[in-house]
Length: 270
Ligand SMILES: NC(=O)c1ccc[n+]([C@@H]2O[C@H](COP(=O)([O-])OP(=O)(O)OC[C@H]3O[C@@H](n4cnc5c(N)ncnc54)[C@H](OP(=O)(O)O)[C@@H]3O)[C@@H](O)[C@H]2O)c1
Image (cartoon, rainbow, N blue to C red):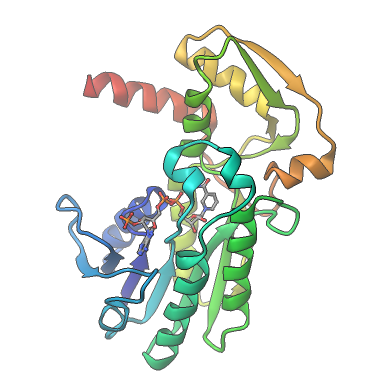
């Protein structure tokens, strides 16, 4: 079985990747800034933003899955004015560059990079940072793959929870298909070991719907009654904001089922 180094293994997507790698019998080493005692993996402690710990982390590694990111929007679960002006590049660009250089000196057979659907048209600085990270991977002499995914349900949920207090929710009518990290993790683990390389088919969720429709489903699942104000954006503006329907592979878990599952988990925890 191969030894997989996973960056971002403590994140939303990363934890789902870890579960699948471990149950498929792979040796998993998670590169992170600190350990999570609940996760039964090998740990390599370091920091992509400085390069600390990276060289040692790559020892004997065959496959690297690069799922680390520094997205202030995802971390806080909402957009602020500052996000329209800047986004840190130390992890997604400089960190990716460091990692690629060290992989070249190690015995890495496959560098699988996680990215986002529709970056070319997106206007937020975070999208430009992610695109710069992708370019580094494409120009690397390593055997690489890039998998792009649409926005994750957890992020959509945080954003809707963030406006829950508003009596009126302005929501774009642009069609897109967010996806769950469990479906993306299934696909990534397949891509890691299927022998193919290069640009892989992108992955999105099963339902192509407007943000208005996703918001209605969210309100129903949470028992909320708020007025939804439809925002009719041009296609270009919608794509610029990251609302894109993916082509390619489709996940299976719907937003409605994901919300029900979350509701049940929250009730069980309470
Ligand atoms: N969120 C979305 O809607 C979405 C959609 C499509 C694609 N993606 C892509 O999917 C991937 C995972 O996204 P996610 O939302 O699951 O991310 P996330 O939950 O925000 O997790 C980010 C991960 O990056 C790690 N990380 C951050 N800074 C680091 C540093 N300086 N050194 C080492 N590790 C660092 C974090 O580790 P610690 O904080 O534990 O150190 C964490 O494990 C990313 O490539 C993202 O661009 C995300």
